[in-house]
Image (cartoon, rainbow, N blue to C red; front, side):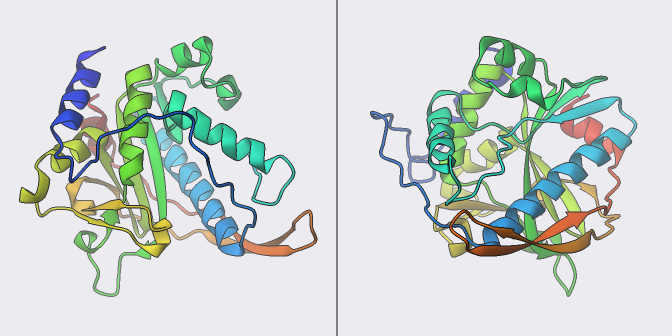
Length: 277
C-alpha cells in the first residue's frame, strides 16, 4: 500500500460514523434490477457522455502532454433491453470486488485505448490502469452559473455509498482520484483526498451538508460547494443540441437530446497544481 492510499485509508477511518457509516460486507446482496427506462435517463446519459468528452478534450488541449482514455463501463443498454439484467448485476458485482471505476484515466504522453480495459478486473488491466497519473470521476449537471448564482450555490455531489466503492478502487490501483463537476458555465475539480478531509471534520465543519434528494434517487448524498475545489475553466461555450428517439424492444419510444461541440479551455497552471505535476 503506497503512501497516498495509506493516507486516504487513515482519513476514511477518522470520519465519524454518523457522517460515513462503516462498510458492512455481507454475502452477495439481492439487487433490484430496473425494468423500465425513461426519456430523462437518456438525456442524463447523453449529458454525462458529453461532459466526459469535453473534459478529455480540454485536458489534452491544455498543453501538459496529458492524454486520457475512457475507463468507465460504456455499454449502451437501458432497462428493458435484452441483456440489461446481466449487465446491471455484473456492474454491482464489480462494485463489490473492484470498486467504482472512474470515468477517465489520465496518462502522461500516451494513453492506452479504452478497449484495453474491457476486462477491468484482470491482472493486465489493473497493472495498466495503475500507471495512470490521475483518475477522473466526471459529473454533469443541468445547473448553470448565472441569474445571480455563484459557485458557492452549486455543489460537488458524491453519494455516501460511493466513498467506500471509490476507496476500494483506489486501494487496488493506487491512482490519485478526482471529482470533476461540469455545470453550464464552468468546470470545477476537487481531489478525493480533499473530500475525505472535509468529511473527517464531521459536524464541526459546516462546509458540507447531507441530503437525500429525488434527483439523486433518494440516495444519501454529500453536497460540497464548488468553491471547496478549484476552477478549471469559466470560458464556457454551450454545446449544440440535437433531438433523437429510441424505440425499445417492446415498442415504447423514448426521446432524448444529443450534446455536441462546446468548449471550456482549462488553465494549465491550475491543472498542474491539482494533479501535483
